[in-house]
Amino acid sequence: MEKLRFISSIILGIAFLKIGIDHFLDPQWFEPIVPDILGAPRFWVLSSGAVEIIVGILLIFPKTQKIGGQSCAILLIILYWANLNMWINDIPIGGHNFEDKWHILRLFIQLILIGIALFIGKIYPINTNSVEHSRELMAKKD
Image (spheres, rainbow, N blue to C red):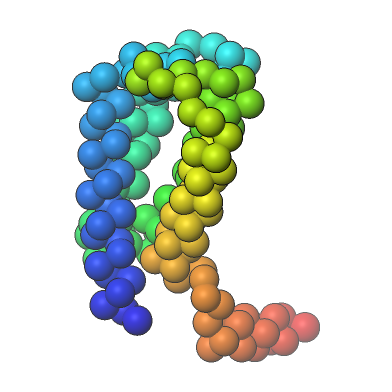
């Protein structure tokens, strides 16, 4: 299980590094899907790119993979807002509008990635030992 967690973390880390760097190399590509309510699309694209690079680095190094996985799960949840915005408002990206079936597929991929990130972050599946440890700590406080 640990080997799978390690390999998953490296693969996801490299992907996040690449995508984060892409935010700096071609920010115009990402800008259309930034929700209008946020304003300043360039700021949000570059900020999210920087955070993706940091998360990618955290995922690659063994000592930071757990926090990297947890951070990645949170980031994937937050960043889905841009994908949802693209879907709801039929915003083209890269010169293409996507049919609903592709947005649904993207949603499922996002959910799978969140699950992988939770696995890397040792949140899922729930470790019964850590649940028992938490109960013991709570009992000591009473």
